[in-house]
Length: 187
Image 1: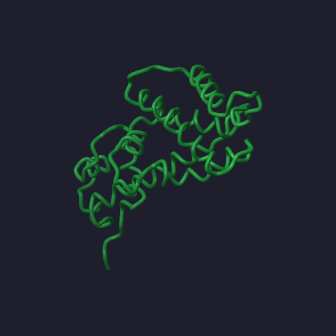
Image 2: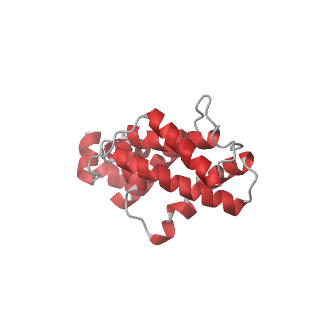
Image 3: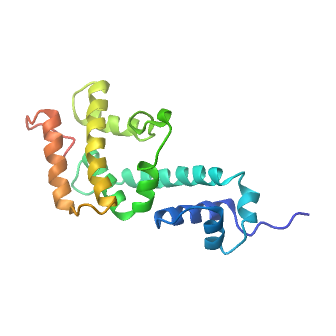
């Protein structure tokens, strides 16, 4: 009978995500040290460290997606996603960098393939009278705008408070939608 597993796959991934969020280098050695074990349990559960990193990415992305969808009182749901994106960068710098500032393969274009895009496009279309292509274009521009702020916050190059972020998101949304006064995605 094989020995009982003392460190689960879930424990390994949770610790990997924790290391990444704390901006530590994720290696078999650093992970085993954080788990207080040898590297054997890691490679018993995973084929390679690339497999660990892939599953850590998936878990980190799920955490991000869940956070992105949290409502904010008295803020429209689309605008709330922009605020949440920036908050995630502020509060989870390591995970933000891992998810959004790491080099990816060309086919992994985040503006095309991220699992949150259909959700974001629907939020826009539910509030503003426009077709899907226009909603996708607004989503792309807003994502890039929010990403710029979030990246600067994650890299400690600016300190922008929540009130400033709120005002900037309003101005950009109004500009994108024509500023006619009926823009409901920001309310």
